[in-house]
Length: 154
Image 1 (cartoon, one colour):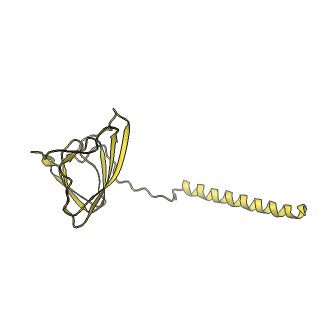
Image 2 (cartoon, one colour):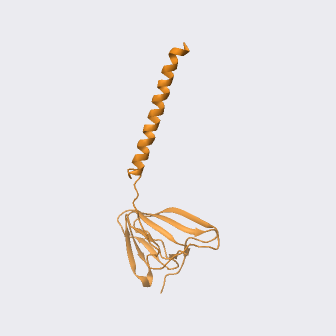
Image 3 (cartoon, one colour):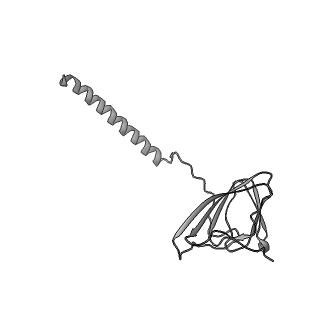
């Protein structure tokens, strides 16, 4: 009985191994040709904030990254505030106009990416027709606030 089933087992092992080698070869060839399954769309490359300020990460305390989605109703406002840490923002939906006081106003719409101003008072208003949503990624540190409420600049 063993003599007759051995060739079947060897055939099964051979075909399984061949399939594995062929599959691995196709995956390796595809990855080396740039046919990988993911797509990378760069949103922003910068070393300055929206106001032209160079930025650096806090170094006195352990790093802490906070990612949040900020949702603003039509006509909503953030109130005057500052960010003492670098903040990457990406507009997921809607339109927001940000007043930077003496630095002017800027309008951000769906698909816009930015490095927000650091230590500069600003106030955001949803000036679009619908809800505005922003992905906010704060690159801060333990014990350092990401946002601080401030008085409007004069």
